[in-house]
Structures are given as C-alpha cells and as structure tokens.
Amino acid sequence: MPGYLDVLTQKFNGAFTTSEFRDNRRVSVAADKSPDVIFGLLACLKNECGFDMLADLAGIDYLNYPGAADRFAVVYALTNTATGERVFVKAHANDPDPALPSAVPLWEGANWMEREVYDMFGVTFTGHPDLRRILMPDEFTSFPLRKDYPLRGAGERHNFVTVTRAEG
Image (cartoon, rainbow, N blue to C red):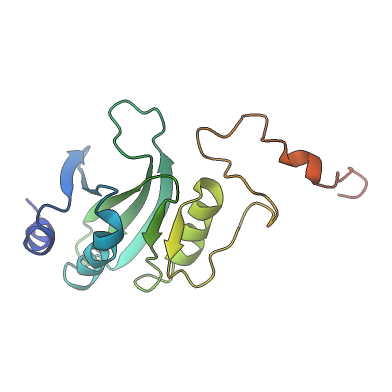
C-alpha cells in the first residue's frame, strides 16, 4: 500500500474507499461525505503527500450506470512530480444541486477545469473565484453533457441568432 494511503487513512478513516485499475490507484469519496471531506483530503494529498500537480479535473454523469449509487463524480488526477506517483480522486455529488468545494485555493489550474465541469454537467464549486460558463453562451440554461440532456437539444437553439456562412 502506498504511504499516502496510510496518511489518508489516519486523517480520513472511513470517509473514502480505494481501488486499483491498470496500475492506477483511485480514492473515491461518496456524495454524502464529499462536501465535508474532499477539500481536506486534496489538501492533505498536496501538502503532506507531495501530490503537487493537478494534471486534470473532469466530470462524469453516472445516470443509469449499473451499480452507481451517486449521480455525478468529479475526478481529480494528481501527480507527485518528485516520485512520479499518480492518484485519481473521485468526489461524488447528487441532484438536485450537485456541489463540491473548489480546489482553486490548492491549485490555480483548477479554475478553468471547474468552470468546464460546471458548464457541461451543472456541478457547482463553492468558493470558486469566477464560476460562470466557459463553453456555452451565458443565456444557455441546460448542461449538455448530462446523460438526460436530449440529443437534439432542449429547444434552446430557437433563442439564438442564426449565423450565416457569409457572416462567419
């Protein structure tokens, strides 16, 4: 077992589960514990375990996924640049208002990645310095990467001005 899991177990015992897939270690926090635990867990990984780089942050919608207990997950891909170790931390959130604490105070690079997850999945990040849409127009009210979003849109296209080839 990697040393960082011992540190996490001492500080957050019972708040997470672990698994391994293709040499990638995963730490998963359920939706009922994520809002209270995830920021401290990420801070511990950064400050005490040496995971100094947030390589990626992405959202997942588990709607109708077999065996899934929670609707959304935000995955933090962390790297320890001194040792080359990687760990994937998955924080879950549920409807109606999926929310997690922002990781921007820990890694400035989380800023735009959290905005993208908010824009595509509707997961809000409390404490984010500028949480607004990054890919979709401001007046867009839906979240297009949710699995229950209709493939042909939810009718919002009628509200946008058509741009012709000559104008574009």
